[in-house]
Image 1 (cartoon, rainbow, N blue to C red):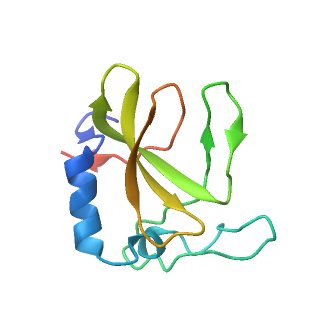
Image 2: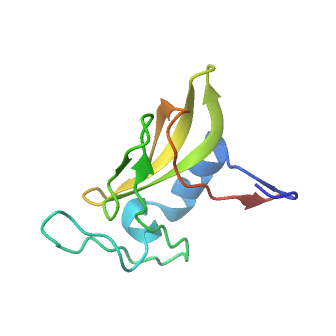
Length: 114
């Protein structure tokens, strides 16, 4: 993140989930771009202006997946030398979540102002 900003850790992501409440996934997702393989819309309401766009991710071998289906954002919380947490939003779910993932993958970032 640029100077004066930082990558949120799991405590900060959980504060966001608490503030947003139930159906956090739907409330944080952008109002366009979310779709399944059949082209069915899974857009969110974006009531908080978070505007999470479903960019998908890059795996450890460099392949890209799930554009239109998920948004994943890195957390500053590390789990050992090989893993870190990520915040995820999926097309088919209505709850945001935190899970550990390989650091060699590529996810989006959201920076918080210090």
